[in-house]
Image (cartoon, rainbow, N blue to C red):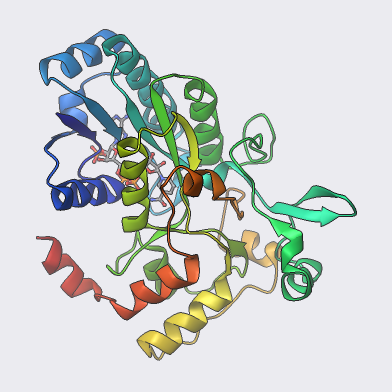
Length: 323
Ligand SMILES: NC(=O)c1ccc[n+]([C@@H]2O[C@H](COP(=O)([O-])OP(=O)(O)OC[C@H]3O[C@@H](n4cnc5c(N)ncnc54)[C@H](OP(=O)(O)O)[C@@H]3O)[C@@H](O)[C@H]2O)c1
């Protein structure tokens, strides 16, 4: 039996839908079922439910956004670090594999070619980087799974949320039992305040930057494919290959949805941070070769964005669909 922790959440519900689609039996485990973060109690729960695989889609992301994690630090550490670590230990005791929804936000920036080597570029909103995207796209690479997170408590500045996700990785990544599936700014065709494409249409003003993104359905398919293919345990970047600029995505929204919406952008990072954000934000590009080589490739990001927008379900209908 597959146990799904965090089943009611944004990512948990996507796992539930994909498990249903595959005809794979699973049991949702809510926060109340899981009880306190106690290794023996959790190992007992895994045994009593005869778990064969555990999916951890539980975690604390903050509402309305990660700025809430700056003040709700206990919940952030409990949900993202302690719970994930204790669950991994319980799975090791029970000798059951576990997959965690990790995050790409443990990085900021990307790698750019400098002479014969590569160096980290964190200013992707600047004109020099934009010029590079236009004239030398081959000179840009994402962080692969071997790269040490550079947006973490060990490498400040970072948001408290990103720090917690990097700390969880540090505690879990060497476990023989755990997959860490890195997700980044999830989107799909179901409008809503958690969907990146929905967020862009709800914010009054946007920060124009470059990022890798994850189609929610592609992500859960790739995560489960890794297990099905018995890929080695460890970290996998599960973003759609490539990267996009915020203003390119808003142009696609305008073209495909035909919405009469004038997207406004902050002039620079100073204006963004003084008006709209408390904690530093990660903007990053990830390398996806490892997942593709393990048989868990995802569609190129522009194809996934186009498909989501072409199948767009506005919020009222999206809510009715999910009932
Ligand atoms: N959404 C994103 O943009 C994003 C991006 C990258 C990574 N992630 C990661 O994806 C995972 C799921 O996020 P989500 O967006 O699906 O969040 P979500 O919609 O808020 O769902 C999170 C689920 O986790 C449960 N939970 C929270 N704290 C818990 C704790 N201490 N013990 C047990 N369960 C707990 C929640 O239970 P209650 O309903 O009882 O609170 C909820 O069911 C998290 O690890 C998050 O860091 C999300």
